[in-house]
Image 1 (cartoon, protein in one colour):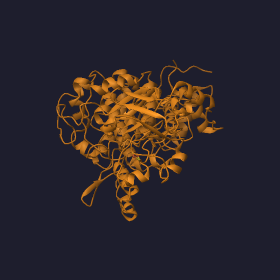
Image 2: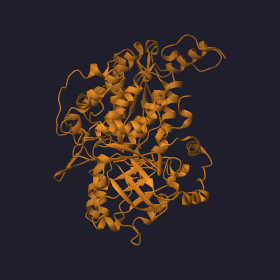
Image 3: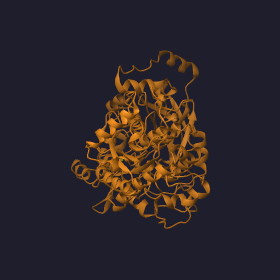
Image 4: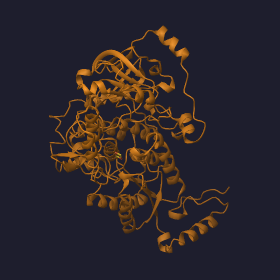
Length: 567
Ligand code: FES
């Protein structure tokens, strides 16, 4: 096997291994010429453009025109732009859940970034799992890369209010379940919730991840929140192409951008946004690719000293277009600057301190001053205790404070099917003071850790006017949802965590003040239940089997063990 000579550029990189590298390059150029490129073009440095356009992915509807804009930027800067497809994940289009395939997208993207002859890349993503997958891939492949997000959709004015996916979807559906909205009305609303291209229009997972990518430094500052249909979005794409070419001459690799300091900045921002709980799992996975550990105890310390400053749905009133117009991430980072590591560098090569030289504009309706926060403490809190030895998460900014200190009876569902079968049963033994517990829905199960943590309020309670009650599980919750909901209980039930042993009628204690989540069952009873517990059967083949064999728990970002860096 011949040795790779000194680093090559453009099409001369990563030649196929025929035992004769000169022949391999000759062959590659001759095939590339079949696409009509001149020799001058083929001699240019190559920028790969990750194309996640898909007929199944409404959030990526604008990807074709974004690619054209990126190409303009690459060509004008002297590079050769070459788009290539990767797995595309749209949140509502995938069974059992898009989370089950995030690592497949990350693996696919990393492999193609590494195998194909490119000097830098522009990663086009947007919907919830695509940006995390691309950042995980870039962190591992470690080639110069710029993240370009598709941008949020616009809210739709409708009969005196504004609507956007997907907080309003949940709000109307809950009202429908409670009998306050008719079937005709819910059908009418269905056509008004997502009326433009782009990702969900609230501070859900996609928007949170765009803000995190901006904070990490993989998206140029100010560009993560530009609406999908705004002309500035195309200019940002053109700029991303030019920037990628610039990164070839003066490389700044993801390993220099995604560091312990920038990850901590991203955690601060997640807390100040009141952002999605899913983003914590994704950030943990991205950081893990660079050997950076996200410690949930440290999250609690940060949460106690980071106010929520952004007032958007699902907890406030604004939409992403309001956040962008209010000053976006530059204004939020300016507000937080004394809490941040300012020497982190972004894809432009500038430090955060250099990027935050002045506050250009801020609209205080959506981005509050430190003296007048939405909440004086951060949006997320980690809980530990006998029910969650390795942690669980509560989005306190979206929860009911009167439910923060509670000891109550558990009403347990063994899995999603059991939940679906019994939750609306008029005979279900449940009151609003009980705690709903769902188990066997974590990443090791065929359910694939879906966003089912937002357990519906039992219909008979919803119809009686109950709007929130404590719910807990080993699965996730949409970033657009709200309620007193404990998520990501780790280890999950299918891994044999204490959650597997909970039964209806057990007492469970939640204390947000003490950061505790405890199962109040004596050790002898738990031992007896453990002896009878059986782990779930493993899938026999394919991706499902790879996941079952390799997936890590939520406190390690649910990455695949084999994709983490060698220790
Ligand atoms: Fe794609 Fe919400 S469904 S961002």
